[in-house]
Length: 430
Figure 1: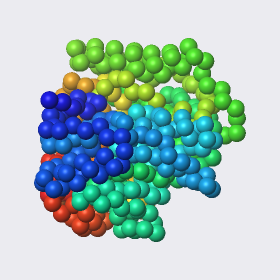
Figure 2: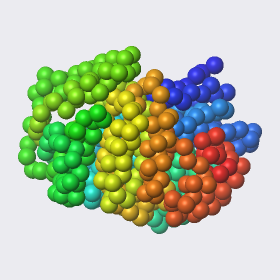
Figure 3: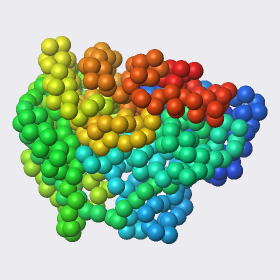
Figure 4: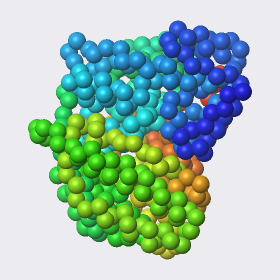
């Protein structure tokens, strides 16, 4: 019997049936069978969600063989791909075409369907998350019908389905808005976290893409400023890249995490090693700077709040860590995006800041995450759909002005719950 687990290892399933289709017709056939037999279907991509959004106890569909790049539009403003394409592969192909995605998250191995379905976002005060880059998709509904969805066709399904949680059906092909390929000049340097927060508006507004990581048990933050430029690529030399991105950010950092897990009392001293890398500046293609490999495994919770509240909210998280004596060997990540109009997007209707907290795999996370979640709820916080949270339909419905609009479309497309599971029952009410 085939077993499945997600990237972090905190979600597992033993489905009754396991399929790896390579065509839309195969996907349709599986759904029609499930509908007729009153079975349930879930789709998995790369398994990077920390929640149980993709957990299947009946029929599991793995998209590993459904990841083709289909075409570039005639005007070169959009591309169409199969839903299982991995972001790393998609962006390599776009680069060869002289194109790029306007914004990206920071993980290279997600599938496009998984990234969209959970409201993955990236950073940039004038850039939206990935869902708002969607211009069309084909959706396999619960009865096996294939709906072509865009702003001019099946408009309501298109509107709510750009972040669909896998609850509306199976995304088959996806059309994404793209832009001409562009270069980024990256500046990475440590700053005092007090200086970052005191100047947060200027840092966000004076950079095309800005984010930072506060290092618990220190007064330091690691900042990343990425700005569009016309400079030629000047990436770190191979050894420097390996040293900074593979050894320091993964191997050495992982070793510190393992040591901290074995001897938690050492964590505050070990944390002081992280901000010592100094300033690094380089130029490269946008997709090579946006996303990177993550080899150290962890658990994560992330909340979106109104951007204006980010300083106060983060200061409360910092105070929580001190007051409770929490021993944390992972940074707290802070990013920013523009508002959008996607019903279940975490940035719906507001310019947003994202505060993400992490715990090394194998360490207890629930008390920390629950305490941070309680803080975020004071600011109308919306949890990332693919990251750990403790919300239910009752609390979530008040956080999204178009929550009921989504539910109505879902009830129409999947009245018998072919695509549901326990997580979706919890967050969507059935």
